[in-house]
Length: 421
Image (cartoon, rainbow, N blue to C red; front, side):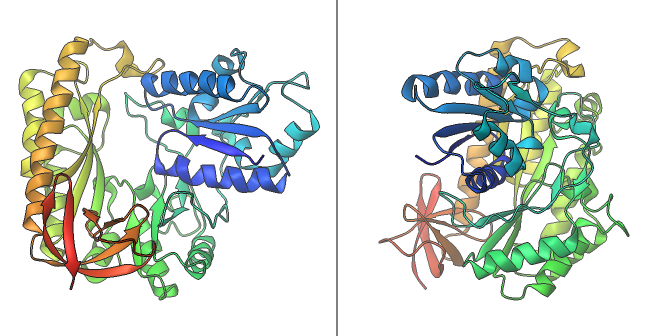
């Protein structure tokens, strides 16, 4: 039986799960389940522990390795679980030597050591992982950055990922060429703090410079997409390529978190409410078809009714269409966990209101696309996405990975319908 990887959390974790499979295969590991955890909320940790117990019940004879951000931040929590055979840190999970050591019994259930987690703050390089298969995905993910140097008061991730570090541009270009050669029509650049790309590299190339070079050096790449970005760090080169390069998809997911300036200060964010609105307006001047997603936290400590209303209004004021709403969850070890907390019922109610506002915005966005001509990337399950990341239900079963020219005919629920243009 081959290695199975269960993934929690972000796109970067999804990318690294594919690297885990590749590295474990290189080490000829068998009959193992690897749980790649997320530490972004206490709920994410709880869900991973619940899943581990379920996996042990269902797979009594298979080894269970736990890794990822939660394992990096609190390895003892997982090592204390009887269901877990070994714990790997975020650096160790990407090394074939770690899996070879486990296979030899050097650590884990057959050895004296069950934890193999280093000091993540000592890691200062990120290497390309050479991943060419993404289970369940038609588009390819390409990691260009890892770690974070910021210290938002609600976030534990810097302690799970370490300092910000970038993959050299030459390696990114080589990986993109390899992925397009494997047949991927679309690549998504991923990272923990994507817009900090390049600060640690010689010459300090920015994310915009990387995108410009990537599109110039890999002309066969049909579509390039960015994962979550920090709009305040969008450099002039990135704004230029947004304006000039149609192969850069016009969907930008922003790490916004709140629409109120006082809450943003208490979060130790680096942008203001006006900065988010300004970025969206600047992009729309160059790319009127652009769409914006956003991460928003509801019920942050000390958030008043008026402060929450500012987040609600930001959805319309900035033209946000695709919301990821998180009810605030105090993460042990973060400053926000020590701030005055709101009642859980109020937090959940505010999250529901934000999601409802987001649903209205998404419906309006989808309706505005009726009658337009869109190039849709066909995916598994007869689904696809437009350049602005609107979901489309496809007729028949088109080959995943093909680009289809469709005229949008309408909307059903949260997806569009269309016919061949």
